[in-house]
Each structure stands twice: as structure tokens, then as C-alpha cells.
Image 1 (cartoon, helix red, strand yellow):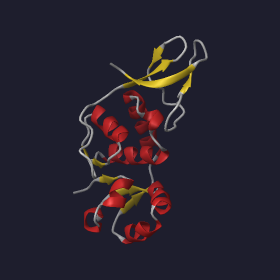
Image 2 (spheres, one colour):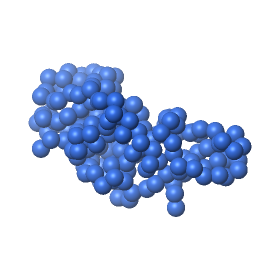
Image 3 (cartoon, one colour):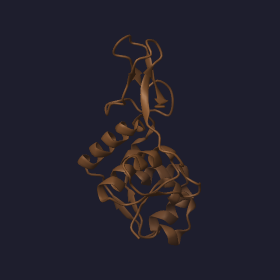
Length: 164
């Protein structure tokens, strides 16, 4: 079965489950950095390493922005997401942001080593000053935590918050 594998699968699954998987070229550096020993095994397997077309990446950014997950996705996450969406294949990931983005557009996901996300959430930006709300744009800064951008109205930091 063809499927897109995130780095958690590359790190934790047995070799026979990885064979035939599709991965982004950007994952090579990530796995070498995280586990040099495991990378030697993974690179010896029959894995389909792919460059991500720019139009697929643009589409992935737009879809991740609509769910609100974009600010917390890394470049590698976006590449993996773009492959899964562009190839219309299931994504194997333990990353809840990737799972949420895929579920928001009705795509198939499976977990590597967790139970997976049970709910689908939408995220928005809320100003810490004037409390204005806005959808997440595609040009937003991405980081693990902290403010996402400054408010257009008052200049205060805007934080990612779940839509209730």
C-alpha cells in the first residue's frame, strides 16, 4: 500500500513496514540529525524519496492556513503534507497538527505509535490587545510557540487560539 511516511515512522517502525513508503527529500537531513545510526538503515531501504513541487507546497500552505495549523508546522512538516495531498495518499504521522490538517480536508491518516487525534479543531489568530480575531493567513510566521504576527489594528501580538 502506498503511503506518505513522516519522520516518526522512519525512526520507530521496523524496516519491513517502511519499504515502499514515500518521503520528502527534506526528511533526509532531519533523520540524519536526530538519529545518525538509524539514518544508515533507512537510506538503505527501498523508500521513494521525492522533491516537493512548488504548486503542491503552495496548496499545502493554503490548506494548513485554513485549518489554522500552519504557524506550528515546520518546513519538513509542510513537505510531508504537500506530498500526501498532492499524491492523494494516506499520511502516517504522530504529529497532531498534521493529523488535524489532513482531517480538516477529509484525508486519511494513521498514527505511528499513538492513538491519534480524536477531534478536528480549527484555529484562529486572536489579538492580545484589542481581542480582534482573524483567520490564519498563508504568509504567517511559523514557530513552535509564541506570537504568530502583529495585529493590523493595534500592533499587539496575535496568538493562535482554538475556535470554539
